[in-house]
Image 1 (cartoon, helix red, strand yellow):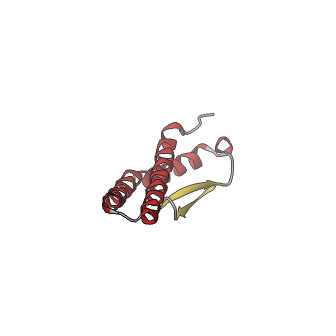
Image 2: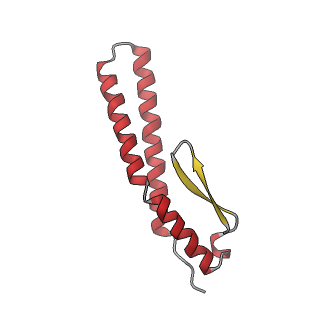
Length: 103
């Protein structure tokens, strides 16, 4: 196959790493890649839900926190998790726009 799926530690999912341009892959390879990606892509909503729970926990801590430095740290952690969610949604939508090319 002309793609490897590599685990991204920041996002917590496997991401495709194409060795060729999508258009240069034959139909069979494109179909295989899309099928494999759908398996990984299907885990993204659950991953987002887990991160949202982490954000909720951090927000609860922030609400109770009186130390300014610790509040800034919590805000930073929340912002990073929100950034991860944004990136996960981008990857999730990527599957909608990619199709098998018919020559």
